[in-house]
Each structure stands twice: as C-alpha cells, then as structure tokens.
Length: 211
Length: 211
Ligand SMILES: Cc1cc2nc3c(=O)[nH]c(=O)nc-3n(C[C@H](O)[C@H](O)[C@H](O)COP(=O)(O)OP(=O)(O)OC[C@H]3O[C@@H](n4cnc5c(N)ncnc54)[C@H](O)[C@@H]3O)c2cc1C
Ligand SMILES: Cc1cc2nc3c(=O)[nH]c(=O)nc-3n(C[C@H](O)[C@H](O)[C@H](O)COP(=O)(O)OP(=O)(O)OC[C@H]3O[C@@H](n4cnc5c(N)ncnc54)[C@H](O)[C@@H]3O)c2cc1C
Ligand code: HEM
Ligand code: HEM
Image (cartoon, rainbow over the protein chains, first blue to last red):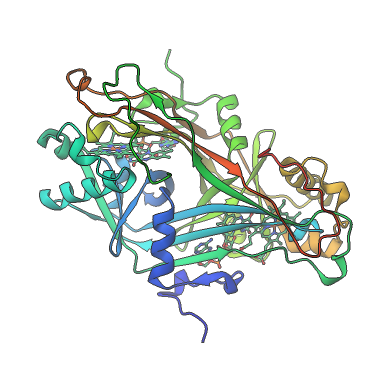
C-alpha cells in the first residue's frame, strides 16, 4: 500500500517514491534541522522568512518579537513551513541524472499564539536546552519584560509531507561505462572553533547539539 | 545615509542595522548558498518549495521538470525566494540575547521561463560547472530529449534585501559578569568522504565547490 498524504495539497506528485507521511519521519527531519522558512500572505502578496524552529510533541515552534510583522501575519492566515537539509551531492555520468541527497518537510496549517506564561516559559527553556543541554538554569534568569516582548507561535505537524533522497547514483543503463567519476559526496554541518568573548568570565565551552 | 531598499515591501524593518541592499552583498550570499526556498501562490493558497539555485549576472536560476506544478505556477504569478545560511551559534548570558550569526536574502519578483535552447544549454553548463569545475565536458553529452523535459526559470535580483548578523555577543551591560560562557560557535558545511559507485569506471573524485 502506498503511503497516504494527510491532505490533497500535501500529496507529493513529482517522484512520489520519495514521499513519507508518517509522523516519525517528519519529526526526525524537523529535529535534525535548526532553521525553516515560513511562507505567508499579507494583502494577497506572498512572503517567506527564515526562522529558527524547534519541536515539542506534535508541534513546530517559532519565536520572535511580539511586535513583528511576521508573527502578526501568521496569526491571521495560513502558512506553509519548509525545511530542507542538503545531505549530499550526487554526481552521475549524464548531466540530467546529477542530483542531491536531501531530507525535506513541507507543512501546511495555521499558527496559533502561545499566550499562557507557563507554557511560554517552558517552551523557551526547551528551545535553549535543546540547543545547549542544561544551559537555561545557568543563565541570568529571564525577566517578565523579556517574556512579554517575545512572541511564541506553534503549528501542528498534522498536515505535513516529507520527501527524502538517500541513495546512490541512478544513471541510464547504457551510460554506466562512461569514463567519468560517479558517486555521492556527503555534506555535513559541523561546529568550528568556539570564539570566547573577551569579557566572558567562564572559559569552558558548553556542549551543543552539534557536538 | 542609511542604505535604501529597492521597494517598500523589501525594506527591512526589524533590526534594520542588519540590512544590506547592494547588489554585491546580495550576489555573494546567493553564491554562497546552494539551495533556496521558492514561495508562490496557487488559487490563493501559499506554497513554499526547496530547490537548488545558481546565479548568472543579475539573475537567480532554478531548474526542474517542465511539467512540474512549481514551474508552471511560477510563470503565472509572483514569487518570494528565500536564502538562509546559518553561520554561527551566539551564546549570551541571558536567554533572550542568544542568537545566530547568519546571512540571508529575500527576493521578490516574477520568474521568467528561459526557452532559447542556446541560453538553456549554456545555463545548465554553468550550473554543473559551477558545482564541479570542468565537469560538463566530461559527461555523456546531453540529449535534446533531456533538454526538452527540463524547465529553466530565472528571476531578477533587482528587488532583493540581504540581512546579516556577523558579530559577537550583545549582552546587557549589567549581565557581563554573569558566570556562564559567552561566545560564538561557528557553523560550517563540509564535504565528507566521497562514496564512489561500485560500477564507476573512474576512481578519481572531481573537485567540488566545497573543496
Ligand atoms: C535540497 C533540495 C533541493 C532540491 N532541488 C530541486 C531542483 O533543483 N529542482 C527541482 O525540480 N526540484 C528540486 N527539489 C525537489 C523540490 O523540493 C520539489 O519536490 C519538486 O520541485 C517538485 O515540486 P512541485 O511543487 O512541482 O511538487 P508536487 O509534488 O506537485 O508538490 C505537491 C505537494 O507535495 C509536497 N512536497 C513537494 N515537494 C516537497 C519536498 N521537497 N518536501 C516535502 N514535501 C514536498 C508539498 O506538500 C506540495 O504541496 C529539491 C528538494 C530539496 C530538498
Ligand atoms: C538563520 C536565521 C534564523 C533566524 N531566526 C529568527 C528567529 O528565531 N526569530 C525571529 O524573530 N527572527 C529570526 N530571523 C530573522 C527573520 O528572518 C526576520 O528578519 C525577522 O523575523 C523579522 O521578520 P519580519 O517579517 O517581521 O520582518 P520585516 O523587517 O518587517 O520584513 C520586511 C522585509 O524585510 C526583508 N527581510 C526580512 N527578513 C529578512 C531576512 N532575514 N533576510 C533578508 N531580507 C529580510 C523582506 O523583504 C521583508 O519583506 C532569522 C534569520 C535567519 C537568517
Ligand atoms: C549538478 C547538476 C544538477 C543537480 C545537482 C540537480 C539536482 C536536481 C534535484 C535535487 C532535483 C529534484 C528531484 C526531486 O524532485 O526529488 C532535480 C530535478 C530535475 N532535474 Fe536536475 N540537477 C542537476 C542538473 C540537471 C541538468 C543538467 C538537467 C537537464 C538535463 C536536469 C534536469 C532535471 C529535471 C528534468 C528534474 C525534474 C525531475 C522530476 O521532477 O521528474 N538536472 N535536479
Ligand atoms: C538559544 C536560544 C535562542 C536563539 C538561538 C535565538 C535566536 C534569535 C534570532 C536569530 C533572532 C532574529 C533576530 C533578527 O531579526 O535578526 C531572534 C529574535 C528574537 N528573540 Fe531569540 N533566540 C533565542 C532565545 C530567545 C529567548 C529565550 C527569548 C525570550 C526572552 C528570545 C527573544 C527574542 C525576541 C524578542 C526576538 C525579536 C528581536 C526583534 O526582532 O526585535 N530569544 N532570536
């Protein structure tokens, strides 16, 4: 049985053999990525803005200034959230069969504002500790003023599709002996040498999710 | 004099000190990134799809199946193209001053179809050779059928804004001696160990733009 999409608009039509609609695959890609692009409309015009995200259960969360245009627009209409991870370069014998390995997710729906202070606080903690395990409790405590200036939004992962390519080169059979290198070059995101602020009173660099 | 935006909708309002509107900054970010997200509308609904891009002069190019929904929709209405590079994790003494270093571009406009066969061919060659210098001439030559199945679109970089954060930690003055590490952890995309196809007749791995 082919996997089934959660809605007509999220059914993958091009290369549907790369489609996944199960919650576990979607969640794993959301977690593996740190940034997404949020597309929305204002007065019939389309906008798309890059933002950090994190996941709690069946929702993707974003944050920003309560006063920002994006956060306001998102409470007023539908959005499309896109996540893409570039995992590898695929080099084929023919130009057209060049490709990339990737993991991506497209989510449709409507964001809802998180207003309950305890929920907000808990989510921001999960956000910080998700990037830097245990860091929240070591920070200068957050103030009510800071919490009030911050807008927190979440969107359900219920109407989401994932598309994944994670295999080798697919060349036409008659091209296999063409004298050119064929293969996959993986791509990774890695953390570089930490740059401690001159006035940091602590020298020991915290763990991050990239370690 | 503050830099001036090419249009009202592309003027950066949040943290405008991070704004750049000059063609050189926009082009450098477009070139540094390999993938973008293209947002567009169909019947008043918003969609955003990740795609590879490349640049030639004042245009950003994308490619795909001529028959694809995205390519068709893009010739019929306006688009918003978003590029985001995550350059570093910024760890502050307070939760709220945590941030990222990044380079991003948002482009508004309308894609145009590239139909002239010589232009199409030249652009696809620039695409492949831009990723893998000199590779085009070593490949099994492209066929008319392949060229015909491929759709090529470009959008002018004239209505674009860039937003960049590339500095250290900005904490509140009274927090500077808080006993927690403060600094920036750079992020990089690197190429891993190439995986040669079992049936590749050539062993020598080509250069890529990630070398
Ligand atoms: C890193 C990366 C690079 C890519 N480069 C290219 C490229 O250069 N050229 C190209 O043609 N395509 C590229 N793709 C694939 C691209 O994202 C689209 O899947 C494809 O272009 C078909 O788009 P469509 O709107 O016509 O698809 P359709 O299959 O008609 O889309 C229908 C629905 O399927 C879902 N869907 C579509 N694409 C995705 C996706 N990627 N992830 C999750 N759900 C999806 C959405 O819900 C969408 O509304 C790339 C994808 C990734 C992740
Ligand atoms: C990697 C990354 C992570 C980010 N994480 C967050 C986050 O977690 N929370 C958050 O609030 N913001 C984040 N930002 C900034 C975000 O992209 C927006 O700039 C910000 O949210 C303000 O959005 P707005 O629509 O309210 O901006 P406005 O300033 O009102 O936007 C007006 C116009 O400015 C231009 N513009 C806006 N943002 C950008 C941009 N990033 N690049 C180029 N042009 C732009 C567009 O043309 C837009 O139409 C992040 C940016 C990047 C690149
Ligand atoms: C290094 C160069 C290239 C790379 C990295 C590349 C990458 C990709 C990727 C990632 C896709 C998306 C497939 C999907 O939907 O999952 C794609 C689609 C496509 N590419 Fe390329 N490509 C390259 C060169 C070319 C060339 C030169 C041609 C022209 C002959 C071409 C023709 C196509 C077509 C027709 C599709 C649509 C496939 C479909 O939706 O049915 N590509 N390409
Ligand atoms: C590790 C955790 C965090 C990271 C990586 C982070 C990152 C960011 C980034 C990149 C921006 C975009 C700034 C821009 O527009 O250029 C931003 C905006 C913002 N963040 Fe955070 N943030 C974090 C935690 C928090 C917390 C805990 C709060 C709540 C107190 C907060 C409040 C805000 C606010 C209010 C803005 C809007 C700034 C403005 O547009 O004026 N952030 N954050």
